[in-house]
Length: 231
Image (cartoon, rainbow, N blue to C red; front, top):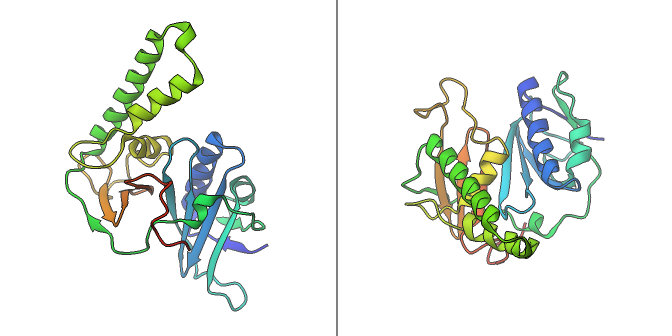
């Protein structure tokens, strides 16, 4: 098994935390790994959010395996989590698995430009809390015979598909960032008036919410549309 040497114990712990949160939503989750040089990108799709989550991990030394200088493989998130050794700051690369459809359609590598209007982190967290409260209130008001899975799903889609004004970012992207631990306060000096450095970027049909702990990417027309390059 190929072993990745992570920059330090903190990187290992953050990677383990990210994988654990993905598995919370889907015990059979897969992740796509791409490594080149001292950077490792871990892509995952948390179930029900309809977004792509990206966790960037720093490596202690440039990746290489034999004569290969890049890594691109889809693996089991559970097996990868089991291989993480936080004290040693290492992670083994499990055997490749047949990737889910989303793993073949990733956001573009470049061409990202800043988008204006993104509120501060505290406002993002408040927006998620308000949407969760609305969902609970509306479901509580439903008559028992109407409280079906189909109706709850419809209500959830209606709430989380709203955009975060004045941007085009859907609330489900902010909800995913909150649920995956991407909106927690950043270390001192990482930027942002409330301790969290945030940015909103666009490239073609994609929007990306960037935080110090990871990014959430979403297609403005939904991930079902395949008008992007497959890689």
